Structure formats: structure tokens, C-alpha cells
Image 1 (spheres, one colour):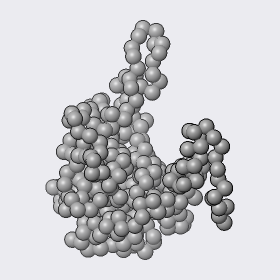
Image 2: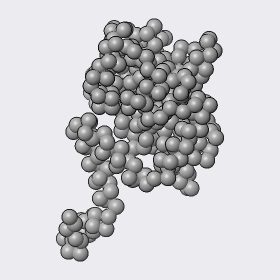
Image 3: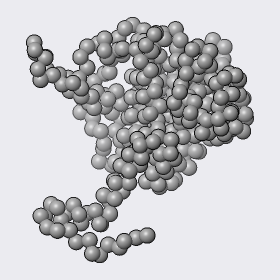
Image 4: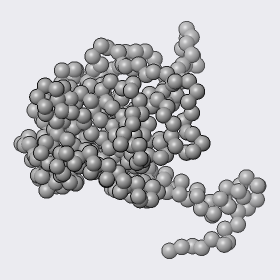
Length: 338
């Protein structure tokens, strides 16, 4: 059912459906319960951004590979790898960010059939980067968008929060497929996804942030409170209880729990259900759901998509055409709908 999009990643796997317009992005560090390090997050962001821009992809499945070679346990993601947490965030282990390979040459981003090409998502990330500044002694003419040195590029930070924001803004549903433990920052990632599907036998939900003097004061906590209620959300963080898949469904933190052997197949069925809907309607509904908790940013995202829909109307075409022809627009034939 799946074919690899690339084999260049080390910490995740990235596949697309062979007969369904969905992708499967999976944490691939089962030996550490799929804990993430900066390199993991870099790859995750790159894959999500690549999937976002594929016009034949309508659903993203985010999951974790397993089981663990150590004990046979399953995990979605156990959060940040505490071994490399520094005072300012998570640090690259060797002091250098993983390099992004260049494109494979003459591959095109979109084929004539409309299907996205198999171009390296890392290569597309390179192409989208801002140009580097030209070097001169005085620094004049330098591009402020350019990365100035390796130290600033690799500075410790919580860039998993950038992944959370990307999940919110991807114009297609992102489904957390939870085969095992969702802990700490991994718990927050499932919360920020549009829907959560869990393994009946192995999925466990646990928030350990206060145990390691960390806290997700944004989507991981405040958005969780919108899902399960404030009292229950405070219980999740303040008491640090472990919840089963059934309990997560009951409190509204997950949508459905299914037998572990049916987890991947059910996830595909969900993707197929999404893909049977109107892409425009699904996109607008996701942004509408987000808008009440994303403030002015959410309003801007929704309004931007509404503007694009407006561009597709005859009325908008008349306005554009009149401007280009240097005449006054004629809107007389268009009704004032109510």
C-alpha cells in the first residue's frame, strides 16, 4: 500500500500511498520510544512541508514505527530526548545541523499529469531557502535572511513548536496514528493533530512535562483543555496519570480505539474517507475549526483562503480584467447575495 518518497531521512520514514492520495510519516527511533532530537524535527518538518505542497495528497498520517528492538514495546513518540536537552533547548549532538542533500538533477516538481514528482523533499527544502548573502569586508549589501554562521543555524531551540504550527496550517487533515506511548512532547503532537486514532492494546497517553521541569504552555496544554475540559487537562499535567486508548476516547482526547492489528488499515480507511470529500470544503473547515483558538493569525489564514476562493469567481475575473484593460469594472450583473 505504500511506496517510499525518499530514503534520505535517518530519524523518520516517509511514504506515499500507491492507490490513495495520502502520505505516512513515521518516527523511526523505536529503540528510544521514538523520542525526537533536533535532527528528527528537521526531517519531520521537511516531510510535512513537502506533503503540504503536493496537490494530489489530501491526508497526512503521522505515526511511529516499531516495535522496540529492546523490549518489543510500541510508541508514537515519547517527546524530546532528554539526553541532549540543553539550557536553551535541544542541541544537535555533534554541534552541526544535518546537511540537506541537493536535488537529483533534472526532476521537475510537477509532472504533466498533475501528480507530484518523486523529487527529494530535502532538495525542495533547499530550493525554497533564502539566498545567502554575498560576502564583503564591510558587510554592506548582506541579506538579513541568510544564515550567517553554523553557530546561529544550530543554536538550541524548541523547534518542535514550529512543527506544531505547521500541522495547524497544513491545508489538509493530519491524523495522529498512535500505536503505543504518546508521552511529553509526543503527547502534545497528537493533541495538535486534527484527529487521533489509537491502538486498543498498546496506546498509552502520558504527560510528563512537569516531571522534567518542562511545560507546553500552548497547544499541548491550552488546546488540550479545549478538547477535554480544563479540569481534566489540569489532571493530565498535574497528576501525570497514564491513560489507556479507551480512556483517551472517553475524555475526548482521541477519536477512536481499534485493535492493534487493524490500526494501519483503519488509518487508510480514514484517509480514503477524507479524500472522498471536497478539497476546498475540507481546507476551509480545518481553518474554520482553528480560527477560534488561533486568534488573528487564524483569521488571516482563513481570510486568505476565502480570498483565493473569491479569485475563482466570474465577478473577480471581471475586476481583474477591467484593471488590465484600463476600464471601469461592470459589476451590474452580479447579485448582492444574502
